[in-house]
Length: 301
Image (cartoon, rainbow, N blue to C red):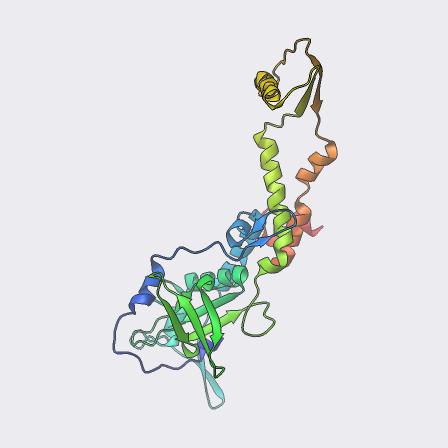
């Protein structure tokens, strides 16, 4: 990682974080992530993906595993490799990685935030402002992008909570990415797994609709007369209460020619229950072993 080897820079005279850097911890309203419409007619985004239990669990497992890794800084002296001790006075990189990356975060939280941006956006941006009081911040990936000037030099455009847009030199940014095809922009898990997530969301929505209807069968009524729209609504309203009452009794007069329930096929009921195949796909996209997920041991069989 590039920021492990960055040297202490000449900084601005301020001894406290800049206003924009401090504002990273207040005022942001994060968007829901890149949105993808699927064949299942579901909109998949970073936030909707987290409503899928398997996806939510996978991102927490990956984030926690990364956050628990003991990042440390070492220096080579001749043939010897020595650990750099954290220095609270200088706030050297060892201190930022092992003790306190900034005044509001622990190293664990910093690394977990970075992993989540990587998974759902494909990019993560670690910012070390040019200031005497050294700190590391995570720039939100949804408002930050890499650009090149006319000379081909890279810098990063970002929008702060105040609405101010700024261009940050590449020397201040450590850019992490996954699934990159050009070395400058990453691609999130959502881009590849959107159809799988869409099927999961559609299945959950269907289950909710069926259970919300009390598992009652639908029905249709046939009458011995021609009805306009108003007439159909009157008939529907007259018998709706009886049909919606579980175990209720519908009473018809001689104008009703036929009443028939529309039964749910057993194959449809099995479809609503058979979502484990999609769970396996979600696990595979995240690369998480099935045994790490609660209740997923059967998926290994």
